Length: 317
Length: 319
Image (tube, rainbow over all chains, first blue to last red; front, side, top):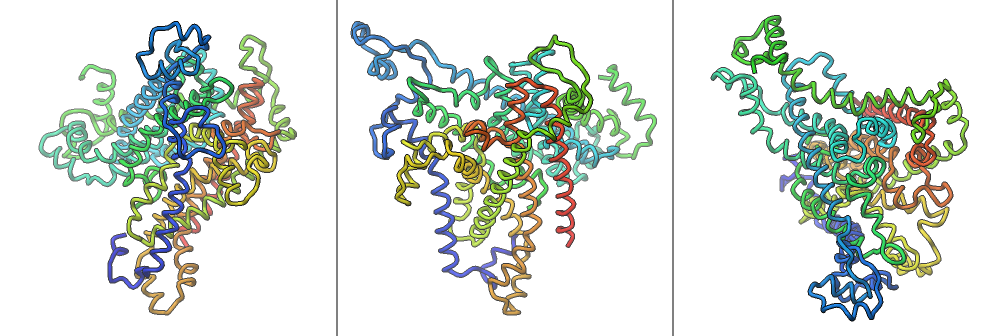
């Protein structure tokens, strides 16, 4: 890869080619951003603005979508609303303007919290188990290592729905249905295969001499692992963690089939946000925007490690 | 720590194996550590993947229904499998899946490879724009797919507006999600939007792995850029392209979230891919035994096709 950037290379593309390539790529990037831009913009519209035709690019921004996302409302007569003391909060005021009053909080916050708990819990476990296994496979002669590694990878080939049937039955027996613990265990199992493969690649690249030197200095194997290998593998562990987090954050199939209420995460919940007379698109836009922000941040943090993560390390850079 | 059963086991294991000098220090033997480190992962996978898989196989030979846990369960032999192979709905689903996989992979590969080639021209700011292009694939297919439902609304949706703006067609004259002809394409468009960047990323790695001196030699031989592209770039990047096709193929074969949210399998059964059929059989009709058999058939199909494909991939790699 390093040779490609030489300024005197014979194959350096010409100016015209660079310009055309640049315009094409920027054009693609901008077009592919339209849906995301529209999600964000819709979150700031009023429901009537969101469904006007032609679609409104210029509009008066409103917090109505966000208010509707976080509250449940009941319809009241204008007389009743007029009899109330003046609204003190923005959402209260907006809601009364629609002849409704806020009845209570919506389920978005608990569902979002479930997403955070399940995603971070399973990521922590998957990375912890994955790091140990990766070290085991990287440094020791494990009988049938190749078969075990392939077995670990092959668990990803099963369609989630196919696994969901027996998991559903098993969880029902064990009382794990619709619990955060059940979802954490499930996502850990799905993610651990990725974690083992990625981390094995990272740990393979740390020279064994480091640990051996530490052990000659009197460290035990475990101390050497803890004090020498782990710090060296830190960036790899962080990258792996973000991949696991992204998967667990985005997962839908298991979530929709195995959770119904208390442990439900945001992906199955967002499509169920309904207002008066159909989908409340500004609220959906608001909920989607909030849900996507963490992933946008992670993508930017992750960009250097992306390739390895999505290919299980099968492609080396 | 010295009293735990694990460490006693470890000491025994340590006594049994001769130790290199560096490792003959205090603590657990290497072999014990190796197993201690690997075992939790294996146990978890056995519990959450292999045990359920075996359970699925067992259920696939019964007429069990998960919504009637107390009803008598009968062994029906291979009846479920026989019925699946003769079931018209299943074949329609397989056909829909095959078409879906074919078109998404074709489009994603062409667009992804083209993007990779363009990005590899290293124009100013290419790193920044690459990151922007990658954003869709990092998002939740369900959450974003749900919003695409809004973009596809015939009366109010942005997609129909843009298409009618450029083609002059009446925006409410075509319903992307409601028409038999267009619904499969609506899903293909969203899937391509999400995953072409993924193919781009892998192809980019392929293009960057081609050493410069090959192009320099071609330049000396006065090979035209077109000829260089077809005799150097494409063949050298082929293993990477094939890898991308493998990964996308497996994923799209299993595709559930986007289809479930965009069309739910409809209109009619035009977009009813295998995972949707499976969900309907297992969690709506509660034919657990039947759907287990279908799940096994799907798994064997993915596994078999992937294996054949990997063999082909290795041949291309070693060429």
